[in-house]
Amino acid sequence: MSHKMQRRLLSLLVLAMSQVLNRPLRNLIVDLVPERRGPVDDATEAILQGMARVVAVIVASAVVRGLAELRR
Image 1 (cartoon, rainbow, N blue to C red):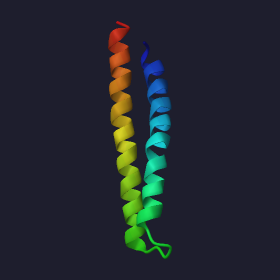
Image 2: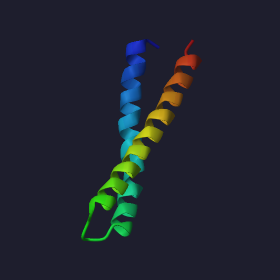
Image 3: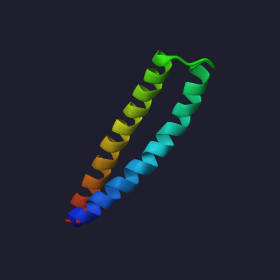
Image 4: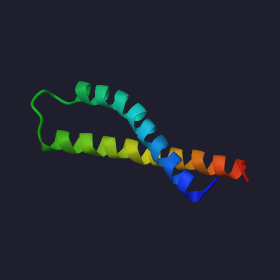
């Protein structure tokens, strides 16, 4: 698998996984965050969404590396 193809696959997997991880996260944020939001609530939401993206990148990277090794 070429490096270019690996990057494309990684990008697609990260997008898909981010969306999958953010759905339950949005529901959690709606439940935890009151109607009147403050800076702390915004920071909490940003941190949770950032962590979901980091997890998505790590998992997608591992999947792409595994696929690349299998194709060798």
